[in-house]
Image 1: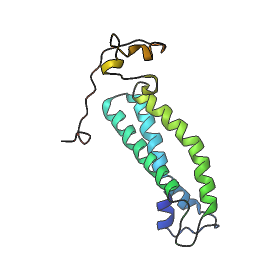
Image 2: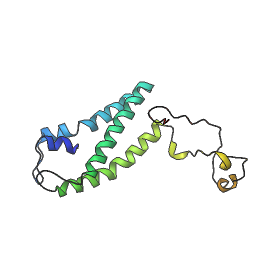
Image 3: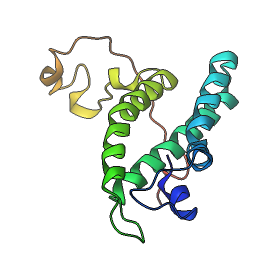
Image 4: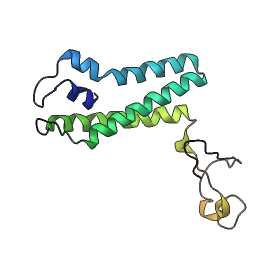
Length: 147
């Protein structure tokens, strides 16, 4: 659940969260699931972009929930901290899997350049790695480019 949404609705630690508020605070999760299901059925760039946007939003929510450490205007929410830890155990592996599927398994790829590249003087450092070497071009696009 989005902790910010809970706080905006005056959620207080150690009180049961109303079903209406649970639904409202879980909307981002449902948007991600819906976007992923759309991607699975359509497999086009627009659907892929939507999934990436929703996953980024979900990552931000998870990060924000953890970073705030259960702070509320009413005192610490220790049960929230426990919920966040449980959520992370589930969410992080799923997000990693989703990003691997969407980006053609970057966890299984290694980009090297310069002296580590095949045929260069330090390639022997990587010679025990299994796999196929392919030429590639890595391009950065805004907002990543810096002048």
